[in-house]
Image (cartoon, rainbow, N blue to C red):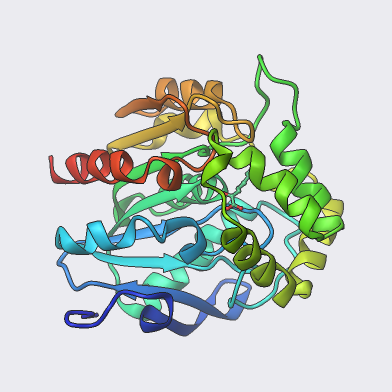
Length: 289
Ligand SMILES: O=C(O)/C=C/C(=O)/C=C/C=C(\O)C(=O)O
């Protein structure tokens, strides 16, 4: 997919595809930029109004400029993808959707970058389809499960739940103020864009609440299976992550076969956005060597 001579924007890279994978028969939205021999798929987090573009808009261009094709998948139940109620493992459901997307657009093997829920989903995909994963980059996610140090659900996860149940601008600001370490970077424009995304798909908001009621453990603990994953893995964690705490990163770096952990200081749950330049440099170096 070539976007040479075309500005890389959400609309210029926006695509839809029909997938059939197991019980999933649905339309997915994704963004597709660049034309390299290697493809990086980015998987977003689970907050209301999240999308591939909302989570990774600061990361697409540098990777495309370095020669990678970049695909952002909007998970089932988010943004312009079809709605779903998840009653089992949402990590596995997203992994099946990713397999369906890769089959439909002809991607054999990819590197995966996952933020939060996207990290849980990347690990679920790697467990189910090891031969189709090159390298993994996980931020603020990779396995569910308890933290021995931080009361759970964390304050950030509680704020996500409150926003899904009562999608107001005040609840949105409460959640987003906890995403990042330095809240001075959050603009009214950013709040408004996220609010618009959120309110444009009330079905997604209602389905998330129904899913959590049907199964509160949407992202199961796969700690006991991490040793099966041989893909080289870069873990990037915000020291000040108030959604998925740093000690989950320590469990991952201990359990995965080949993992390095980088902890960014003055950084919350959105490392790829809050410290985009350092994130992009670190990821490009990891992918190249
Ligand atoms: O409950 C979990 O472990 C996962 C939580 C998330 O995926 C939270 C993600 C929030 C975002 O990054 C977002 O943009 O909504």
